[in-house]
Image (cartoon, rainbow, N blue to C red; front, top):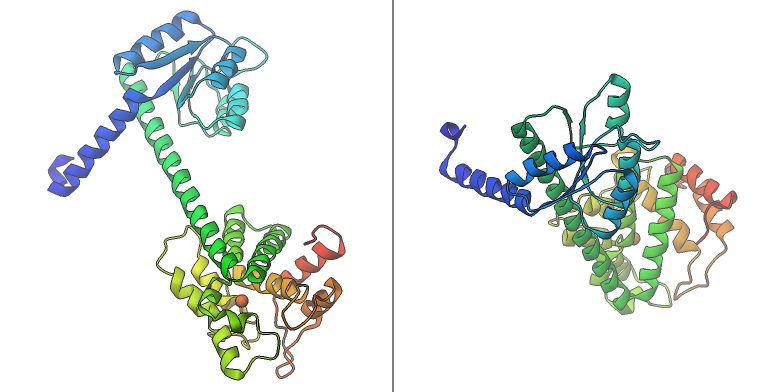
Length: 350
Ligand SMILES: [Fe+2]
């Protein structure tokens, strides 16, 4: 393998190997096996790899107790625990509460057991009797994946904190816009759920909704909160906010297409929106959802130039609004249907 590697790649490979070994040395490993001797033997083998934090328990209650009081990175789980709760049931209980990798180590495996075990997303399976090299390889892979997973969680948390900080910036400049963003985010998520969208798409909608007016921080406050009618120039400045938000966010590597959703949230199905006059399916579904939530929240919010209007006015608007020139619907009919259902069946309220 080294034969094909450049110097840089070789160095990266070495560093990765060192990190993997480091996690093997520092890992907290729990062995659950009803046979005391096998548990002890497995512990000794794992300790021979250099691990110093290896513990054993012999039944499911002790396992849960141990996890309650200690950090565990990896559990090596026997499947037949000679009790009503088998190893797979125990893993299900563990996964509800703890973030811990699992390797099944078992003397018996048939297709049913395998299918049941598979549904708990273990990192690996080993059949007894096992050889120590395969056990070591399985543990290394499990710990490596666990580290990657934890790094992803930390990274995602930092991204979400960044989005919340950006929302706070909007709140400091204009509390009304901030309130509106929070309402849009909540309603857009509810619409996404009503439409049965995948959780990851819904998460993107949540965070795009939360900062969809971010570009307004570049619009002077006097214009944002002007009580009377805006001049054409002032209106053009406000209409710039999707593009300004997009430009501010496009170089941040979000796990969701947030910048693009923000850019498109004022596009309309018949092409009458802005800034790019996109139409129909050329507008992202996420942006079509934010658009409807945006209109409903906006109509039912207090504005510097008018009082808040009742929800019925907003629902009438999205249900009937057609472009007076083309006669086409401005909003996605599926999104509108989901939104109407949420309010009319009292599934959602602001
Ligand atoms: Fe907007």
